[in-house]
Amino acid sequence: MQLPSTPELLTVIIGLIILIAPLSAATVTISPDPVSENDPITISIRDLPDNSTFMIQIETSIPLDTDGRFSLSTNNFQMPFALDDGRIAIHAENVKTAGLSAKMGGKTVMVYGDGEDGVVDIRQNNDIPQGLIQYITLNGEGTAGADSVTTSMDLSGKKVGPENSDMTFTISGLNGGTANVKIYVDGALVLASEPTTVPTTRPTTSSSSSGSSGWDDSTVTTTTTEKKTLTISSLDRSAVLTFDEESLSGARTNDLAIMVSNRAVPENWQAAAGPYAILPSGASFNPGATLTLDLNKAGVDKTASLTILAYIDGRWKPLPSRINGSTISTEISEAGEFAIVTPVLAHTTAAAPAGTTATIVTNPTVSHTATTTTPKESPLPVGCAIGALVIALITGKRLR
Image 1 (cartoon, rainbow, N blue to C red):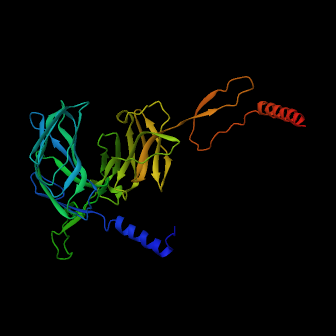
Image 2: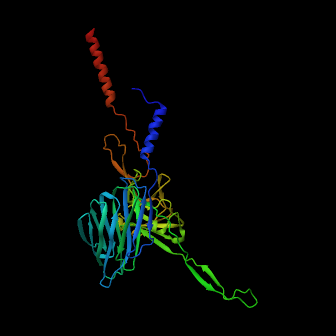
Image 3: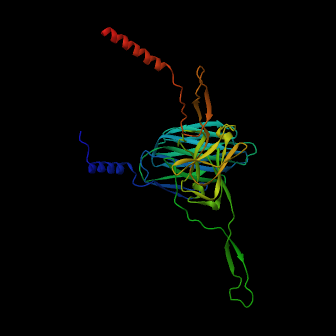
């Protein structure tokens, strides 16, 4: 069979690249930002190819009413495309009970759950059709003594429909609380367009002294800046990032998120929790941020030998970390992927003296170097060779 020439091969490769590679990354604009009660919300999505994994996430903090209850709804949700293999996921904290109800495509879905340690997680798998979703409502009762609840509502699936579209809806039931809307494509946070911000100022007034210029009772405006410590966490609250607002660069505060990653850790380590991906990848912190991982919430054995690994420059590296009770923490200077790991136990066979049984020794190891043993030479092959020589001599005599 004749192999293709180099020019033909290059043509095929370039054609495949053009066919596979997206022409441009998806872009998103969210308006208004921030979101208020019953505001008409428009999300403009551009260059989103079919079969992309799309997710819209609405995070809220809602004060409870006088009866200790809450009810949050997204209303008249216009889906410009369908989500195959779709899922609606709800996470609520500080709740005794919580329920999800939704009406879409002529179907009504209702699911309820009781809080475990004040947390309710509800997941409903269902294709999400293109068109109008009349409502998605999360309601329930807060825990005793709670003033507010925090919630996260996700719609996700494989996108089928137009590349350029607008998604519209309203949110009710905030009760004076706040809402934050995020868009993820193929697991990566898509940064929304930067809104215009106005710095907070405090006017100070000073009067001119006699004999000075004619600007009497002039007003001098000074901008005051206060250091503010912020935290973000994963949906299960097992990973928490703490940082000064002024230290963040490369992203907006509302764009930060912690999600579970599927990246494999090195073969000589075993993942005890995570990996967790801090997004977006361009975010950095100066001074550094503190990443704290809750061992109890992550289900990690606190008596094990634990290390935090970071995926940096294409490979995993251990980070200096400290354990304090039920948490392990480290300082990071940039976004990335992080995992709690334990060393894999390697089995090596120790050489045994003649007439004894070899002992299997189990040692923790973090090295890729294989352990080899040189066994004593057995007398059996020598005996076999001598026997074969004797048989050959006898056979030779008979042939004569």
